[in-house]
Length: 73
Image (spheres, rainbow, N blue to C red):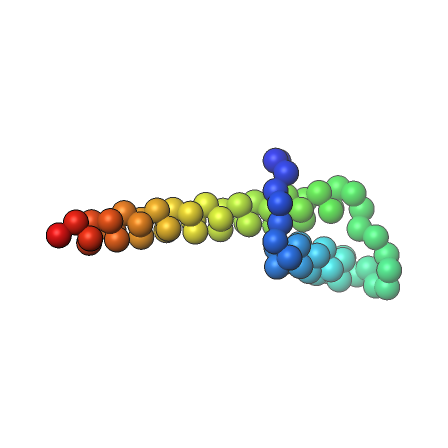
């Protein structure tokens, strides 16, 4: 997976996913997740973030194309 520069909201989303996974595994307090589990959670969340960014970019391109046709009259 490539390196993504995350916004503060995306960083919080990733941290919340780690906390949710730790709670689902029954870890309480300041226990750390196993490295393999952290990697799986990170891949899942970053893939979702990447998909959302691509969808947002595609929507912007469609909107720009639509607005460009509107102003040609």
